[in-house]
Amino acid sequence: MTAADDDSSSGPALNGPRRRAPKPAAVTRERGLTAAQQVYQQLRAEILGLRRKPGEPISEKDLAQAHGVSRTPVREAVLKLASERLVEVFPQSGTFVARIPLSDLPETIIIRSALEEASVRHAAERATVDQVARLSAIIDRQRAMAAAGDREGFHLADEDFHAALSEAAGLPGVWTLIQQVKVQIDRYRRLTLPEPGRMERVIGEHAAVVAAIAAHDGDGAARAIKHHLEKLREGIDAFRIEEPDCFIDDRAPRAPV
Image (tube, rainbow, N blue to C red):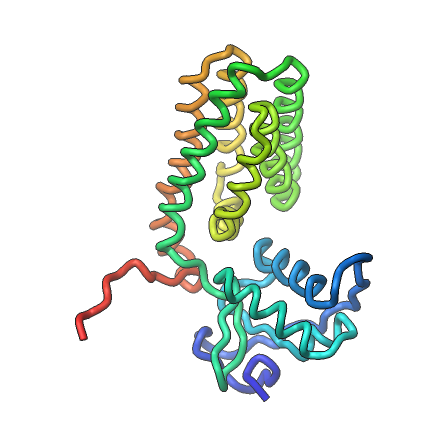
């Protein structure tokens, strides 16, 4: 038995006493998915949405029971998530939600910024009136979510906004690429949303991007999206201090052997 299956033991990825995880609700299998795919998709969504916190233990036994499957597909899903650096498996200790690696964040933000700057330049050249209206409507939805304090709804609207930028540019594949590289950023961004005034600032930054696109100002749109993403990068150190248990600082050089 591993630590993730025995709540009385402590694992290397946690400080302090172990919290007993709530018993998972039964899961209905989606048509066309294998058992391993179903477990993978749900567990991944929970990790990215911070419903499972960095450092939190994962019970493979509980997952198997919740999905009505054997431990084999659960193990397959866990190993796939480990390859994405979302899960850590410690032999003889257990399985845990991986902490957010600080080394990934600045580099990924730079990559994302370069891709989105290219997208908004194209959008400024070719976006239709209807596409600009759709971007504005998404911002209105974000305002409603912010007013309601609905952080999950705000995040989903944010995803829709950036996807719509790529669509307006006629480059939907760019958003697909961004989704592949921004996994750790998504977890970090979730941490930033409760910051006072954060959602309102994001809305203002999004509005500046749309205003430049509507004015067919490619340079202005590129500057606005770069500013938007740079603000995210500037906050990394502050959140590392505020939420130390959520991050792992793998940026420091290793001592010579």
